[in-house]
Structure formats: structure tokens, C-alpha cells
Amino acid sequence: MSDERKVLLELKKLKKYFPVRRGVSIKALEDVSFSIYEGEKFGVVGESGCGKSTLGRVILQLYPQTSGACIYHGRTRDEMCPKYLAKEVAKLPEYQKKAGEFYQKSLEVDKKAEVLKKEIDALSALGSNKEVKKEAALQKKLSALEFKSKELKKDASRQLREGSRTVGSLILCKDLPAIQALYDKAQKETAQAAESIRKFRELEKQYEEGRVAGKADTALKEKMEAAHKEAQGHVEAAKGFRVKAWQDYHGKDVLPITERTLDPAYQAKLDGNYETGINLGKLTKEEMRDMRREMQMIFQDPAASLDPRQSIGKSIEEVYVINTDYPADVRKEKVMELLEKVGLKREHYYSYPHALSGGQKQRVGIARAIALDTKFVVLDESVSALDVSVQAQILQLLNELSVEKHLTYFFITHDLGVVKHFCDRIVVMYLGNVCELAESKELFHNPLHPYTDSLLAAVPRLKIGQEHSTESVLEGDVPSAMNPPKGCPFHTRCSKCMDICTKEKPPIVEQEPGHFVACHLYDKK
Image (cartoon, rainbow, N blue to C red; front, side, top):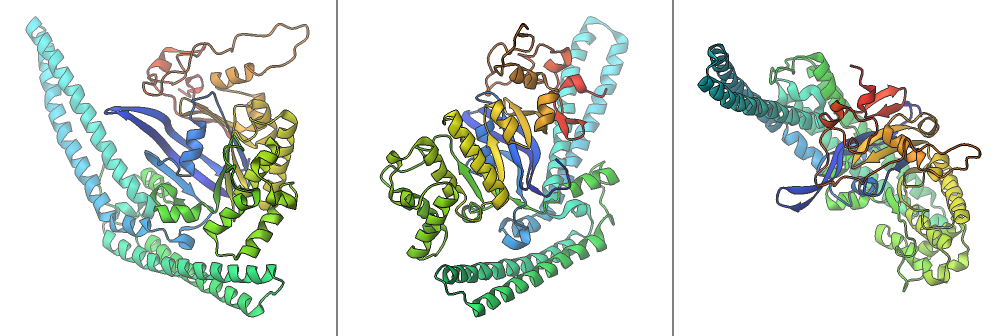
């Protein structure tokens, strides 16, 4: 999968904790980071309880994320103008000020630690029993101070990271008020662009109604084009203000807020945090509801997702009732067209769920998911409840729709056979963590993580005249997400566990081009 393709969704250190009681939480997701490309069929596999379904729901904001970011690039910030942007621009001085305060506090703690170190060195030279006990007590205090200093520096870094989401490394500049003023002007232009786009969409609805009725309005089409041109003008003006901010202030008069801010590499890292897409976790309920036109979900049990007292037609039509102003005849015709698109007949409009087979019910679920301007679809075990022959038909339909409507799929499954042939790339998850990420063929031909190897070893296969290897077969149970193991989350069940695995959590690294793995077996050191 080429990185030159447009990224549709970007996850950055996404966490989700479910509180159980005071001080105790279920750590469902831990620092999940990867990107999904536009038009891609992206698979997620792992055992039950690994966080697959939770991740899908967090992406759609059905569960609010605990921390991290979920950035959607299907719309630009200029097109939508979310309310959080103005708030973030207003908070820039606060981010900068707090970062400085945290760092200065860390320096004060460092001074205290230096004094303690000198005391410890003096005691070590004497070596009596009394001094040994005192040294142990001082070492404990020193460790506490060093930990506190480290956490304060992290807090400072977090403040700068949050500020950089809106303005990149400009958060480090001395003349922040001038930068704010330029971004405020850009925000006003963005708001006007969003208003013009809303006007364009309203005119588009009216034009669509006329088209369905066989009366295409040329004058209405000209108004649509004018509204679109107006929106583009505001977008270009907004970009102009942001470009001016970068040209006038980027890399100039950088404040020494922390020991890292004058380092070009750190500045580049902050620039990498700049979000050109929309941070879904910061949207209001109304904004997220509007976003759901483009982000939908298809559930595992098609029967449970349909109202038994509602006809199939009305069930699909409900999407248009909630999200559009189409009149009843336009809504009905659009539903009829959808039914045919997903392989059903027009007469199914009047049927009820009990009269349909499992595969037909799932087709109805697919029709509802693609009824609007859908770009991203989460499929949560959407074929696992179906017969094998029906699975093949549904997967074929999903494949055809993906090409026709340029849909992006987030395909959650435990069936490795299905994901191997359907998905472009696959991420393997364990206990809320990403273990491995690679293209489908590469993952199956060259699994790097011991957990991936174990999953593949568990797939039933026919072997004649050859004993089945049990070397990679998983043993034991998945640890509790309330009390996950220290170090590598998989080390309690890993046959290749080393001492470092019990102490340090491995970072996810690109071992081969496009092939990422989180395992100490591949540590460069």
C-alpha cells in the first residue's frame, strides 16, 4: 500500500479506559496509532477481548476516547469549520504559559535532586550501618524526585503538543498574539466558507429533487456553482492568512520554553502534529451527528439491527427522514434504487424483517449504511453470522460497492481466511495494543510477531503425511485488561519471551517497508 495515497483517517496514540471503580479502569485501548487510506479495505484481527470492536466504536465516537486523537480527512477544516478551532486558537497562550510553568517546576525539582545526590555521595564514602540506612532513605527520595521531574517535563511537552495541533511549532514563537490574530482571520474566512458550502448543499438538495421528478432546473444549477465558487474564495483567503503566519513567524524568535524547543528536530515533530483534518473527539454532538452522514457502521447481527415492526422500506427511509429534507416520493424512489443496488428487489420495500433470510437482512443493513454520502464504513463481524456461501455473496457486494462508491472499510473480524482475501492491509491487536501491521499478503507470508504467528498456526488446514506443529499454539488465557502485564502485553503467553519483555513495552517500529511490529525480538539495539 503506497503512502502516496490520500489518508482518510489517522489515529494518534488513541486510548480508551472504561472506569470500573475509583482508581480502577479497564484499559481497552492503549496508544493505538496508524493511518487508513482512502478507498482501502483495512482489516483488524485478534482474539475476543483484544479491543477490535471498541476501536471501531471509538473511531465513530460512539465511545468517547480517553486520550489521543482521531483525525478525519474526509472533510477539511475549512469545509466544516468546527467550533473547537476557535477555542483552540484562544487557548494558545495558555498552552504556552502552562508548558513554561511545568518546565520551571521540573528544574526546581532537579535542583533538589542534585542536593540529594551530593548527600548520598558523601554518605557512600563513610560506609557505616547508620549511613547505609540513611543512604537507602535518601535514594528513595531521590527516585521520587526524579520521577516527579520526568512527569513535569512530560506535562510541559503535552501542553506544547496540544497547542501544536492547531498551529504546529508556531506555538513556540515569542510573538504568539500576532500569530493568533492571523489564525483568527483565517477562522472567520473558514466560517464563511462553511456557510457557503451549507448553502451549496441546500441548493443541491433542491436540484436533486427536481432531477428525480424529471425537472432539472438550470438556474438552480447556476446558483449552486456560484455558491461553490464563493466557498472556494473564502477557503483560499483562509489559507492565505495561515501561509502568512508560517512565512512571517515559522522558526523565528523561538522561546526556550523547555530544553528541547530550540532543537529543529523537536520543532519538526511539533509541525508533524499539525492537524489538517478534523479531530472527531473535539466535535460537538451536533457536529458529530452531521459527520455521521459520512461514517457508518454495519453490525454483526442483521436481525438485531432491524425493527421487526417496521417494513424494510421504512427502515431504510428513516435515514433520509433524519438527515435530509427530501419529500416522501423522493425518499421512496431513492430507497427503491438502493434496494436494487444491494441485490434486493423493489417489492422488498414492503416486506418485514421476519420474511427475509440472514443474507437479505445484511443487505438491508448495507443499504442503510451507504444511503447518504458515506465514505467510511465500520464492519463489525458483519459476515460471521452468515453461512459460508452467503458470506461470499456479501463480500462480493461489499467489494463492488467499494469500487463504485470509493468506500473505505474498517473490517473487524476473527476469521483470518476472510480477511486474507478481502482486506488490503491488516492490523493485529492484543489486549488493546497494536502488535503488527502489514499488507495482507506480507502478513500471511512473513508474520513477525509471535502472537501473529500463533493466530496463523491456529487456522485449520489439511496436512497429509506431515505432523501438525504445536510450537506456536497459544496457551493460557488473555490477561485482565484491568491489570495488564507490565512490559510487553503478550509476554505471559509468548514462547519467545525474554527478560526485557517483562520490564519494557516494545515500541512499534517499521521493520520492513510498510511492515510494522511491536516486539523486542526486532530491537535494533
